[in-house]
Image (cartoon, rainbow, N blue to C red; front, side):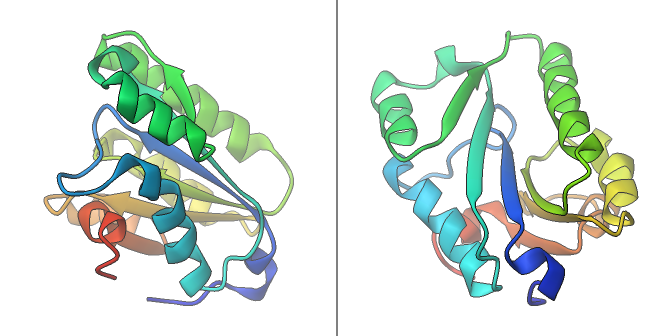
Length: 160
């Protein structure tokens, strides 16, 4: 994996987690997810502040898992059951990030390949850096939309 460019090392990283389409992998503990993400970023020299926001239908997630995630700083955002509205909500949040003029990193955790072209476009912005965690069956174009990628299961199990 490629180390962070110097200008992105201290920049803030926002983790946008599509928990609906990329749930916690089997065998991973919810209370360790935040630390695993931070560790993966740190190994590549991303040292700036990290915030993690999860989006999806929180009604499908057991209360103990929600409590474990939120206790580690993951902000849980309930989005209605309709997957289209969930994607639109996430897209809205991604646009907020993209239009912020500050140098920053986005770590996108999803399998929703409809975001590929946007991620690729944002990656070309000199002040934006896109990282991606995805399932193993992701298309080449989705994986190519980010500079740095991880398999979601491997990242969560520290197999990277």
